[in-house]
Length: 94
Image (cartoon, rainbow, N blue to C red):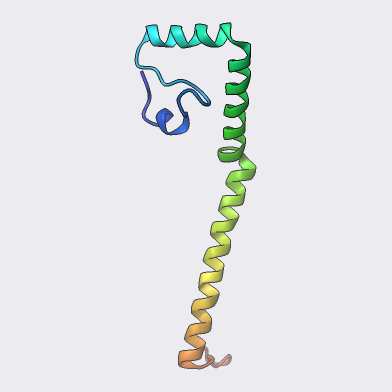
């Protein structure tokens, strides 16, 4: 019953349970219902994982880091080309 992407997102017994059949699912559900400390700890761990890995601010930060690294790479490439070939003529573009 474990979907392929789910196993990479859930750490078993830390922020969720990975199950292979309905009886396992029922057993883990009852375990959480009977243990308020466990379900609170696991819920907090799951919330923190989602907040730190999947929410828009995190995705935006990762995107901006990617853009910044791309821009920096292009600037360094331009500087290297200028050092090797000289500065292009602004009037002719050569």
